Image (cartoon, rainbow, N blue to C red):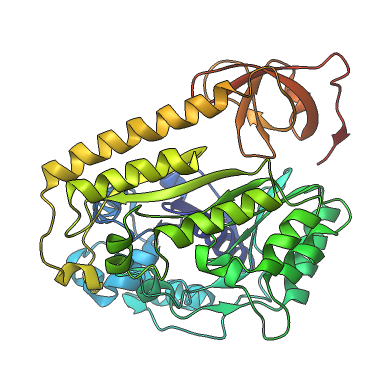
Length: 439
């Protein structure tokens, strides 16, 4: 038996790609292991969005070096591998393979070459590659990621993704539907559709609205989520589908990045503050109970204190339920590195602390208003601390409940009893027995 060890960094797309890696090498007789000391092949699936993510990977590769022995291969895959390519082989001599997101099909041959002493990089873009003939190797539970689109055609000046994932291309809806139907037959009831700008999906015949209608109607699927959309691509058809399909959850992650129209223009986001607010208004008019989360970058080149305050005011005006907040990180090859007036690190750090505080204040206020409300939750697994079960609402709120592990995979009705500001506690209602057992 040969063993494969994979560490995954970054977004949900990387998580889905790791399932592909196990699928590719599973066909070659590799079994997964959680112990690098046991592995015949060790792969680090990397992120390139921020410099600190890359530095973490470089450090981790140094740690994994101690598990190398004759006949063991250490490789990097994913976005950082794509960005650095051959340079990574030169800079990190204990790495045998460097493979971008479109090169996973070649893994078996490259591993054989590495075992013969041939260190190699495969970072060619393949615009046709969707890995349709490779079944992802997943741990089947109640939830699954399904990639429907790869690459990105936007050119945001802060973002490295178009250079690491290539041009946007969409899978055929029929192929996606077949995968979802297969997952549903295996007990999966919640699907998250993945794409870099997922709502711009178009396979040449069908668009993202069609995707929501078709996937949302699959027998056995109770919840449909998607990430990450772009504000520009929320057509009337897509929003109508979100409102009309009962299985589509009342949550959207809608990256804004900045509340300043001038900064948004410098970022190349293709919308201004007012355009973003119009999108939010349309979503809330069509789906009144929708929860909205976002991404925010502070300290973008040239951002003034007044423009940062515009971002703070947007957080309050929209009333975000959550936000992922970041300091601007320079990425070689992106347009923003050439912009003047780079913001000092200490200013970026101070603004990050302030925006986190504002997001928490707004989210806590919204969450306090939900205390006492009855909601449907999916019991996902045991919480990291204690003996409680972690569950999730359709609006993507985490709720901790007391109960036996047998509830995992069940849908329950619970009453929200308290909140820490981010996480809720809840208790099953008097009639809150399992609504359905899945998996």
